[in-house]
Length: 251
Image (tube, rainbow, N blue to C red; front, top):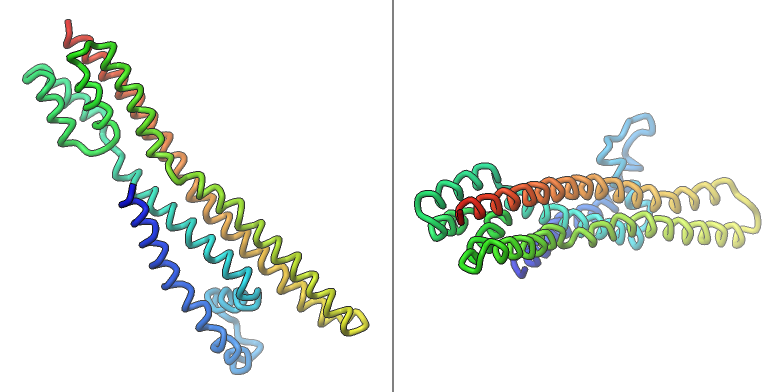
């Protein structure tokens, strides 16, 4: 648990200190470029993105950026964990079957100890209860399977929170920006197209970035969910195969 928390914090720190200084360091450079670059020259996507980020304002755009960084940190940690948890269940079942036939339960437990992943852990718990009977072993497999499923789904709810939070923060920035634009109109005493257009543009940028962040995190979320479903299905199939092996071994 602490290792996974440390992983999240480490990845978040690397992303935060790698991305934030670049965003704020470009503010002076962007202002200089606006004067130096000819109006007809086309900006690169990277330059345009940084300029729009700066125009959106540091507060709400910074919060949206932090949401993206935290969401990506959790997504990367989950992807690494799930890839490490992926096991060739057919190969493991075959190895356990051979071990049961040649060396009994202890040999099968040794195979599980030497195999990484939740499926091997579930197998070990079931084999460890074999001295109490097949029913006890089956209950151990089902119970520990639920524990492993919870570990696979850990922190995914935080990712879904950031997916919902990013556009809401963007909308909040837009509303506050619109209020600021109307304040400028009120102070000017008339509706100036320049004042209105500039204020609305800055306000809408937060919504755009919030939606972009939500889209990026949603892609990672769907991939993680599909990966979890695949591992869980493999766990269930392997658990059924293990119970069949134990019943056959007892006979």
